[in-house]
Amino acid sequence: MNKSPPSTTNGLRVSRETEERLRAFEALHRKWSKAINLVAPSTLPDLWQRHILDSSQIYRLAPGPRQWIDLGSGGGFPGIVTGIMLAESGDGWVHLVESNNKKAAFLRAAIAETGARASVHPIRIEDAQKAIPECDSISARALAELQMLLEFVSPWMLDRPSTRAFFHKGRDYQSEIDKAVGCWRFDLLKHPSVVEPDSLVLEISNLSRNTL
Image (cartoon, rainbow, N blue to C red; front, side, top):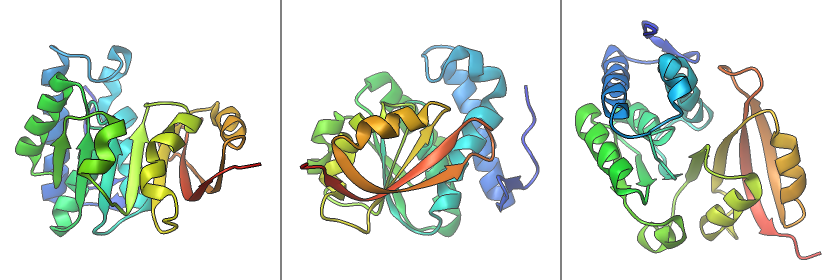
């Protein structure tokens, strides 16, 4: 099992308490992964680097007390990690949207174990806007192609230029962008991953439908 780094996460210094929360989340994740499939089994040996550190990039890109929505939260990436980061400041919140009851139960256990500033909404993404009308930022990881992700986030982003979305993407990200621009217009920032050399985080803002 890989050892966690002492006090720095992706260049973001964290308190000892935050590091302990992240380690507790790692241990709980490994325990639950024996019973339910939270991430691809092949990535479990490198859980800290591949998933926890990778997820922490989201907070680095949009730090501070923000209201987040994390779609398809599944194994807690990046939503629980963001909630743990917010716990250090004691402000901000992450709304975890996960319709799978077993994964929702894991997310509740992770919140209880770590003190992450988050709550679980065991509902479909299509129904989430009714329960969570507004947010500052939206995240999703390993959920869908960009075109579908933009459809998912559109209830919170259309006509709301201040709301931003952050999506982890792999090496085929450009083909997803090319497909999405047929239906959507948006501002895009590409943030290279500090963990995976072939990956990046897409930051989306000023979303509107392409009517041409």
